[in-house]
Length: 225
Length: 225
Image (cartoon, rainbow over all chains, first blue to last red; front, side, top):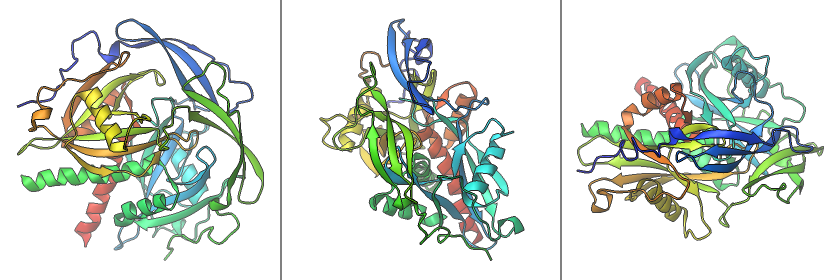
């Protein structure tokens, strides 16, 4: 039986860990660009060959090294099924209205990623996070082109609490966000339908659904035991 | 009881759908950059105010409009628990070795996204996809800065098939990839441990794990019924 293959390239000179960055050029912002810039870098591959690479980087990375937080907000009401909150937001970079979770850049003033999440949640939706269920490791949104990072905080929003009654968002000038929610068991169907209607789908939302699909495979294993 | 809020901004003039792109400048690649470029665009917000925005775009988007495919490869062996295949790859844009799924840009020559996935899977791991379990909608990796898109194909790799015996990757010059796999039930623990060791974590891998976490909330609902 063919078993995979931790050893496939192991112990060779070709392991990815032997690569290293040699230099990064174009550190200065490209003329007239304020938020993002391109950089060209040289790196050494595992065989010692020098190669070049083009990347994009945010000029707003906070001192704690994480660009952004994303909140997966689970709405809890006693004795009712869990709902999940989503946003519709126009994303100029995509030219489309995007289906996404509340999210935002981490400020220098944020004491912690949870504080950043609480602030963004409040601003974009009016809701107060009542419990942190899980904080993800730092994730790279699109490592082929950018070092932009995010941390995902899966949170509970208890709708029976006083602070979550009659809430109102507090949007910045230029933010136009529509908040909506669906029953968690309807998430996949709703999101696929919105995608067919022409809405853009953020990878964090899509990732949750991919996780459901993979999880169902895991549950099949357990049934077979 | 406070119920959310589909209607929060609904029927106002502020709905995100009223936004539109007016113009995109810097269509020409920025000098000496071949793979990605910056663009500055003007758009009209829902109130009709003209605003500017900076984005990054790939110069390699295929004619079918999707930049890349990612494969979530589930390794199946009769009577054994499902395993999931991952890669370690040095990502110059991040300056780190990244934990990720097999993935690649869609070629003009690809007849379909599944064909692209089959080609990338074969090249990067040697394995042949034996079944497509689920194809995701088009997802936007980081809609705040880029229109880069990907489709995720969750696939079965039947290790008992002849084509999946004694496989060998067929890497391009300059690709240094290490293939490894873990039992699906160990994915979360393994990935968090690798993140702590300093590996970068691709958002598609992290998304699967976030999906597990949210799925467990859904299962709690069912238990309460």
